[in-house]
Image (cartoon, rainbow over all chains, first blue to last red):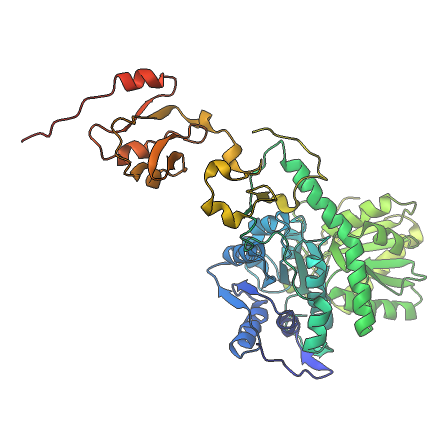
Length: 406
Length: 136
């Protein structure tokens, strides 16, 4: 039986350590992992916990991230609680198997420490990997600091393993700014954390030899569509379970999570919609803008998938101008957050001006000056009641001004 | 195989397929002859794939010594054998690969490949004679 760790009421953990402790407390059966910056410490800490006797499960060192997720799929189909972590290129190599995991309805938990995608090679934080996997059929939870990384990692197991969900769950945090920055984290005790997640209950497990089962069937044009539709419905319907788990977690810890987080939005005229560590920076900036008389607010999707179409509309219904902040090279289109927020708003009565900022690629800092500039431009758009510049703008980029679409 | 096209709300979660009907305990399968197992409709045993074949193995009972080599080597478990007696070929699943013929040790062989449309009785009628060992 694994030893327990007597945690302090407040620990000083970086985001990786927060992931590792939550994974340790979940009493995972199998972790199959391959290290990659900046998520390496998540699995390295986990492996050390195991070597030191704090974990009973298996740790499988594999030859690549494709194999890591494949190992997770096998172990999850066999009937175990399963998790791993990755970043960037490793995430890209996993993508094929991410679709297998969700299609087979295996509740694997994946910690994603977000990092840019090459070329050019870059180890720092942006959301290229998060965006690469957004259609993979996983639930996507987004943490903005180490405390949230810990909390959401615990909740990921409970959400994904719920029998009406049975879907894999990613928990995202920003590379380095969150993953390597130590902050105060209030953990649950080992017993409380495990009691909150609960014992793993297998479904259609291959190790039940009394009912022979096949995972990974082939379906062609006569069956594939029905299976994908059923999977999509499970993902859409997981909203209710996510809210239940958030509520139960709040009851236990006092920490409140919502599918869309809103800050200073009660009377906001202009709003930034962002993900990751940018959210905390934007809140600070919004507070400063309010001192200057600009009614600024911040909206952050906590759950990127299933996309909170309903909650986004509600959160932004009264603002005049919105900046959707995409930290990923948009590849010949508007950023994903712009597209999805715009679609949500177009399906409402509100007609705010919506602009798209591309920023922070490859770990480029987003400073308070940048954010003040964005809020100032938004205020001009709000006052004019229309776009005063192009739709897609770049923030923090050197060289001549780069903008697209009037 | 009879297919019932059901809607998205009725397909299995995770597109898993069960090998047997619910009431059949798969742990018993190893002790139960194939014809007595309660295969589920989704089991490939119930799927006809004989039309993948262009040449077929024909079995000659008169020569076979029941050595079970073909049964062991068949990559698609399409050799039917009961109580270590060779019965024949499962033409619903045999792909015509010819491995059974290759591993057959009798002289002449007890399994030979013929065209898919050739009548099996006619094939047996022109079975080759025993080959004499060459003295050179």
